[in-house]
Length: 463
Image (cartoon, rainbow, N blue to C red; front, side, top):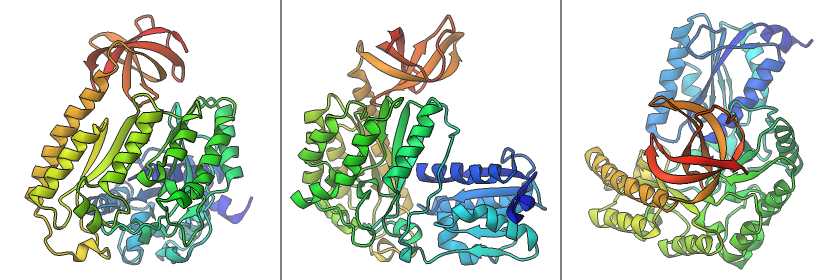
């Protein structure tokens, strides 16, 4: 047993993940490294010897939450070793490494070394250690494979890291670095392992998923015929995942609208396991705002991407992100966004109030929008989002759908098994006899009654 194992063996370790699914995946990888070194996992709310907080820095609120959770870890056990990992650690590492209560800072592309770094920190408990790289110069994808996941039925698979887009509001390229893609062989091997464990659905994810397979430092997603050839690595990967036994569903994380050329969408539709659920980042429905954001498409191009998806897929779920209150956004520009959202008829919208990030172009822009106006616009867009989401779900009243069961719940003395359709509509399947189990694929008939955050359905039989 090496030195790192001796230092970690028997230690109680707790994990907390903030932010995106990429962070969740990386926490799983760090968790497995600790357990292989002999650590014993415990809950974050309980006393542990080591606390690992995988931080987020996408907004000021995320920064604040990261700081709060790091301090809470030390409060849980003042003598514990507190580790700050991830994006906020990368962004504010030098500052964090001087703060009382934080013993080890582990930036991005250093997580695979976390056990070794933690062992060193335990040995030098009186010192604060900081492991940060110049992330903008990193060329290699950090392999942090997982053998199991904590979700019961759905496995998230990280295939890409970094972003070359430099949207004017976004800090992520500065804390994640440039595009780096995972090897196809490693991805397929990981999915094969998880399929053997019984996982039927995989979600491919990354910081800028559309750039998977593009060259590391000059990757830009073109919106021309040339761009079609550039996205082939992602399409080639999807075709190989399609052939893996045991996998029934392939879901994609957030995508750029420019990837949705007709040729790409047509090929995508030929893969039977692809879920007709597409998250296309919009951010604004106003061309002037998109230009200030340094987004690389127009609303016309976005609309065309959606039209291609609806041409080749039946009732696809189109979900998106929208930022309200971006610098310079006028009432007229916001009204354009509301109109565009209705025109596209999204099935779901994730709404964010613009958050200033030091070091970004938008932080230095004039005409910053007051918080009160951001809140008012957020409320107005939320009302539209609710209306659109309910209208989308109503399309399936009386429809027969396939659901992957996830977990049992009891409401008003009736047992249901919850799950999602391929379009990610949440369904409550009546299961009075208690025969449905987790991770079963079943045929259901949706009958439209709202239950909790989903709709009711009757089981018709196995899929």
